[in-house]
Image (cartoon, rainbow, N blue to C red; front, side):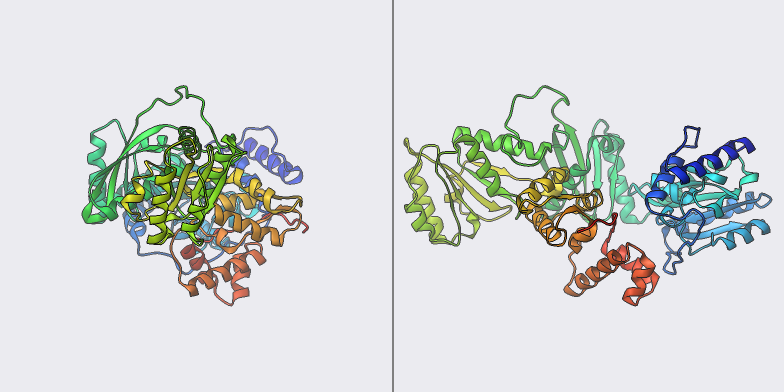
Length: 586
């Protein structure tokens, strides 16, 4: 952690050049500093102001504080003769505890509000050992002029993330701070060592439930060779093989599968295609007493092996390139070619009818394509729909058909099942629907369309495609900040909900780029908890206030007539995530 007078002057000149031009000069800088400066600049942060927000709702009695207490006590004693401060923060960069014996350093830290209750997250105070370590999830060392805001130039700090080894999530941060002129090369090692000691203490303090989950995870790990995940309501433990193998969409698939298994009970093995295209086998074993499960994943095919030519979304003029969606498109096209009747199932809004229509018009654009709805006279429509070679008949929402309608469908299927006039029949239904055996027996294949949250990467292609059909020729696109908001959503209503969100945005944005404030309030929320009517009203009011104040939480709190502490707590409870973009004329 060398910080000589020459290097300090060089960094100072580099920062001044960046502030004037927006370009970081080609000089050696500590890892992460230039990227942090850019983040601060893009956020419009002032380089001379320091105004960390204060919070009065800190968790000072939780597991992190209990685990850290003896470690902080030991560090305080070790550093009693040194001009260093030891800081513990939560995951939002809010100071939980501060230990400092040197009077001059303590008074300076008080002046800049580097004290318990204040947040030193990068979004509030710029580049610093706490905020930058939280942003990068790695050890961060920041000294002197490397700080973005000048009031911090007198200090040097080394921040090390503290990870909860049970959940794999960030638990907090340990920071060592000193004067920049008295900096020690041992600070990064000391911070990392102390963070590791707190991690071990967290593990020791785990509850009986967490220990049981950990034991199940470790027992599965000892067998070796496979990717292992242990999943419970609020815990996920992942070994290195699973972390390397699984993408974001795969985690959603595994969690949904575990939820289904726990509802049904017993062990279960299933074949899936992972987001990178690898076929895999997933074995799920419940841990009954904990309402969790151990999941073992093994790849059954070789990555990178040559694939035979298959029909993909692009061939069907559908948006999306994810392996999951491409496989469904290919499988449905093969069933169409073979003339195999099938049940096409999926959550509401995934696009079952659109997929069946696309496959039909690729194969036989000049032949019959008929849709029989549950709201129609099903018996009359069936009798009026003749067999037609190469034609397609979709029985839409067949789970909603009455018993008499299903009986008429079964008779009609028997009449058109053979002969030259055979049509291709696709019955669409919501996943998990109960259907009679006499109908299922006539549909020999079943294909499931994945929900949008399992192929979230397809949002990037779906958005321009949906805008193209809804913008009525207007020149409207999705800005990068709005796209990031869309990619963060779990989309319980799937493609239909995404289309609705974009129509809502188009009603606000006539031309130009859609910004986050154009999207409906539901697009600024992460997490799947079902809200009461009052909670939804409260959440939407907070989101509107944050959008109106350009994500200024203090101003939004004033606008709503609530305290800062309350708005931060509500943002966390509702999973609100606002990202505002530059103003664009409407």
